[in-house]
Length: 165
Image (tube, rainbow, N blue to C red; front, side, top):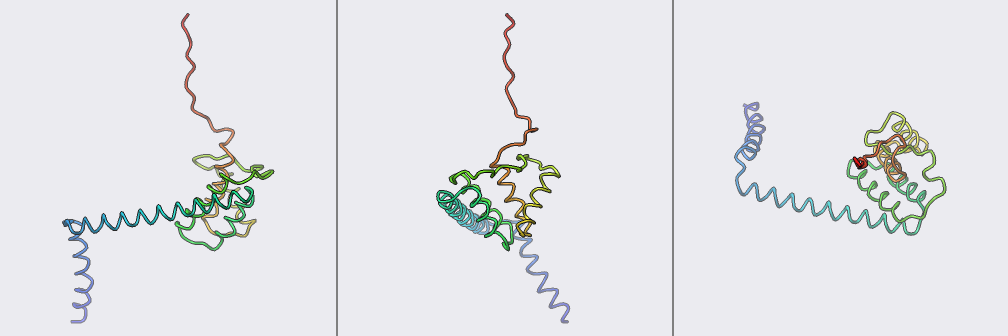
């Protein structure tokens, strides 16, 4: 008897969820859209806040300070949201920060698909700073992006027009 009760307690909620997923009644649709709108508004507000904090910090510091500040505060942070937030902060900070001598020295150029050397550089930079989170490598990609494209990266250009003259 106990097994039947437990089965019913598990099966009934699953059937209800399946019903909502398949039938998709209007009250469920409106509830989902309200939740989604609220969620998106919260994310946009948080993104703007992190960006503004980065811009403010950058106005008072140099590029190296932006990177060090982002990485030191990021250390111990877990989760995708945390990585994205510190990435926003760092990117905004670098926009307004004073140049640091040698900031882009020995930084591999940015590529859409990082090479093994790019990955090794980011990993080594994180290990040297004693930051073990996987997101640290993504923050280091922000430095690569800021410092520019890789030299071997081909850039799209329009063909030059030649006259048949």
